[in-house]
Amino acid sequence: MSTLRTIHDVPVLICDPEGEAICGERDVLDLVGNAAYQGAQWVVIPAGRLDETFFRLRTRVAGEIIQKFVNYRVGVVVLGDISRHLASSSALRDFVRECNRGRQTWFLADAEELHERLKG
Image 1 (cartoon, rainbow, N blue to C red):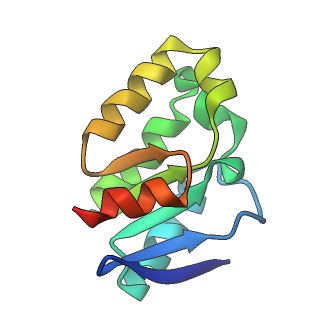
Image 2 (image 1 turned 60 degrees about the vertical axis):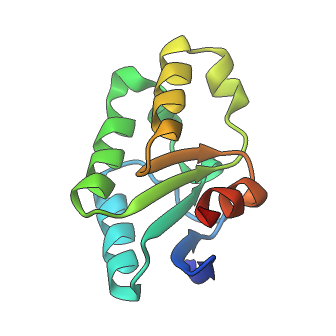
């Protein structure tokens, strides 16, 4: 389940924190399709909805998922605390830092940070 909201004039599809784990291409294609259908420019995925393999970069799950959003020109936000994953992987810390510098994929701690990012 997901909800379309407008934040600072930006349509954002927010995934429900409860639900099946998002763990692959099929799950992402459903999200991207739903976002496109509803006119969303961004999709917000609660960190807890992502399968554990997403946070282990060697599995390539994160790259595959993010690439789908890039291909369809829909921004993606991973929202929530991922500190335990960051603590155990310098590669993931570097990946998150690079993503947060861009305009396509963000890893944000909370809704307040999301509102700030979408402001400008």
